[in-house]
Image 1 (tube, rainbow, N blue to C red):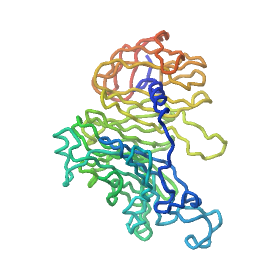
Image 2 (cartoon, helix red, strand yellow; image 1 turned 30 degrees about the horizontal axis):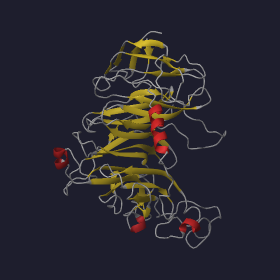
Image 3 (cartoon, rainbow, N blue to C red; image 1 turned 45 degrees about the vertical axis):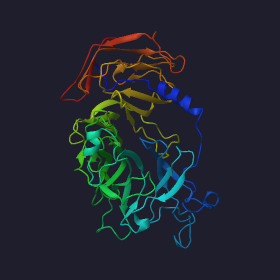
Image 4 (cartoon, one colour; image 1 turned 180 degrees about the vertical axis):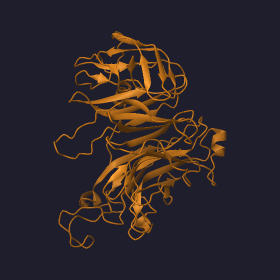
Length: 475
């Protein structure tokens, strides 16, 4: 008997690479924050650090008209120059810290499919414009259907179409602006702003995840169900990690989720998807939320236990009202700092995508195996229909053989174990039969039908108590 993982390896990278080759012929590089500082045409050449600093970009394309694109980033275009001066005062020359009351949520828009862009400045409604909250970055932008004036999605769900147009959502972190905090509190909040004209104008931010004391909400993600066939078409979801503790010590970090069913005006009660305690292991971060064509909600994140890091998923079939317990996907070998003693922000947080035609779920992350090499692994998840998953070669599979996700990996230096199984018939509860085996490298993106089969997946079931997948096969 082998203990494997719920989702099994599939080399989607080949298909992604083929698409990338096709896109490369028409790809172009263009500056989105044009000009560097909104309203200052000369800033492309005159802006100094940190005013010319951006990171953690996000982008969304209008689902009904791809000419409209909205992007965002952590943007310091309104931060004062480093060192002593009229704003920072008498500070050291190397002081480039975030200045109190100055936000960092940048907004950029394009109306011609990304050919040219306009820097809209910082997201309005925050302390930069007299608001009581200061935007703190970690931006996420998504599109969804626009609700009615009252916030109802009844008409769009009845028509199964974007009958009211589209709405863009900008999610990110925020803190109380100087002088606005109540008492000695220092929470980090999760806010969402909305735009019904493709990012030109935005609403004031609405708090989706509140906080008090030293509840530090971080690593957020948002997603709108935009599949017209979904019974929850238009529902907006947000996930994040809630760090608990004091100003200097965190004692717990659960993954939490909320949803809005009125276009971001109001939000549901927070739901906790994971354990909170992190004693003896590394906690949990980097959640991502997506929806399937039938409205199923998936939240994945990097978790950990006494055996180390792992990717997990929680699933909801009722629009985020309730979720399954976390289900193991695979063990994770985190990338190490390249310089001993350094503190680089490297991680193996997962990316998640759901095929809106078949319901297949794909998860990808960076992974370090056998002490060298960086691997990308993509996994199929539950979907409707019993069609067979296709096994393809994962490029960039350097490294030596190891034990991979409970299935013996009999690989040489130039091989990688890929598993293919039939998609589950009833949403992560049962799998059909399928083969697993080694795929030899060949022409990029090509099938490897001659690969030796190491065994056959005879039966798989989800243990109701342990919440892990038992794979019964033979070597």
